[in-house]
Image (cartoon, rainbow over all chains, first blue to last red; front, top):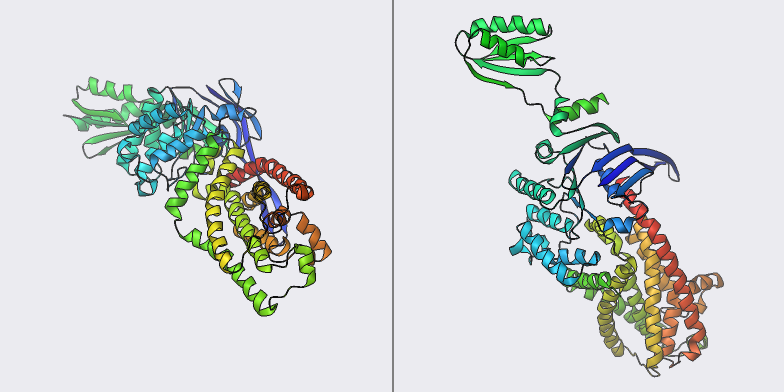
Amino acid sequence: MIKVENLSKTYETKIKKGLFKSEKKYVEAVRKLDMEIERGKIIGLLGINGAGKTTTIKMLSTLLQPTGGSITVDGIDAVKNPIQIKKRINMVAGGERMIYWRLTGRENLWYYGQLYGIEDDVLNKRIDNLLKLVGMEEKGNVPVENYSKGMKQRLQIARGLINDPDFIFMDEPTLGLDSVIAKELRAYVKKIAVEGNKGILLTSHYMAEIEELCDYVYILNKGEVIAVGTPKELAQLGLKKKKLFLEAGMDSEDIGEKLNEACRLADSSSVVHKEEETFVITSSVDLRAVVSKVCVDNRAVINKFYEEEPKLEDAIIKLSKGA
Amino acid sequence: MNLKTLNATFKRNFIIQLRAYPKDFFFGSLLTGLHTVISAFFMYYLFFKGNMKGSFTEYAGTGDYMSYVIVGSAVYLFVRRTCLNVSRSLITELRTGTLESIMIAPFNRLQYFTGNMLQQTITTSGEIVVTLIIGFLFGLRFSNFNFGAFIITFILSLFSFFSISMVLACIMLYSRDTYISQNTLFSAMFLLCGITFPYQYLPKALQIISKLIPVTDSVTLIRNSTLLGLGVREQLGSILYLLGLSLVYCLVGFKLMKRIEIIALEKIHG
């Protein structure tokens, strides 16, 4: 397990003041972050631009040194033992980086495998397996410059697995990909976590991706964790009012009045209005039981009765603004 | 001993070079050497009328100016190509977007740079051979070639070029610049290190700077071995000086590199 405690990162930047003068400025990118990443789980790291997601990933992957706090991987201090940790982690980023365009897919994987000191027979088998995993067996000997965006990204995932890491950090892995390829890649990510028992930390601006893949999500704002929970739990935080939709059968006009009365009684701020054949009940409390009772008491035929799906995106916007 | 990083970097660079720069770099390098040789040829025969001052023979140990210049140019070409490519290796990774993916791997830096250096040495050796063939047309004569001394001074020179590359790599990675830093250094080398004239002609202050650049002794040692036939024993003082100086450069380069890598990665995000 990766355990992050009180992790902080402050960048020192210089702002030019004239030709020879400059002023130092300190930017706190991450502040006292606590986090856990278990094997076999996909953890989401969300936040608006500049929230500290990429800095967090770079610190976890030993590329940046924290200014405070600790990162341990199965009890080993990642800051003090980077070489030991590097063997057990890897990173995948979106945007066609991290691979050599002049080399073929197979040559890329071979080169990175050599940097990890993997024995040739093990490496060759692993390259075959990884190319198969990402559906690139037939394109392995083609130079990367001839690959499509999706193929480059699939190769990136294979590269991220070349050292058979226990933990993988994925920084917007589906950036710029069309929805078909993005869906394929999400399937690989799920497979890697579940079948490969690897811990994955994922950042993405695509909320559907986070909702589909992540077991647990951390929302960051200005370098601080402002909310933690499952995607469903967090999405609930984004709802200003609860919305119920009811499509009832006969005598629905009468039900409208009854609904209004019952709902007002339960929550004075609730509003019932009709949109075509559907009653929309907006309230700050859960009125599902009240609405059901009204329908049962009036022997109304219920065609549809559902609650508005909360959106993770709304939660992030709401929480970020609130913070 | 596990030399995987060295071997892999060597192979990777060869493949990339074969696919990316098949002709352009080769001719570019040849032209640099050719340009220097032809300039020297015209200067020697049109301005100096084939006569050099007595002091030149005293400082250079030979009156054969064309051979002096051609060997100097060949060494300069070697320095340029090796320094340029070895020192640029990390900043090239930064520009191609592969710096982070290699930095996340637990690879050996010394092997990585040595792999780059070896690949460059082989490529440049090919260019030097062609340059020397052209040089023979312009009057190059190895009248007193000491093969044993040449091999030793050549290997030592490679180490000295490698050590300069390490320091230059730090400067490039820190400043994220290749153009100004490399051209400033190469101009200084060309003017101060005795490529086309003995450094003893320089003012005293510049001579001190010249002696602090390993290329000066490197080019002198190679000339002494190939044109004057001097052996290792006769050049031992210079060999030890060059070895010591190169070691200092190498240690400073590697020591700085660790710090510069951190700064470079911070600059990407900060």
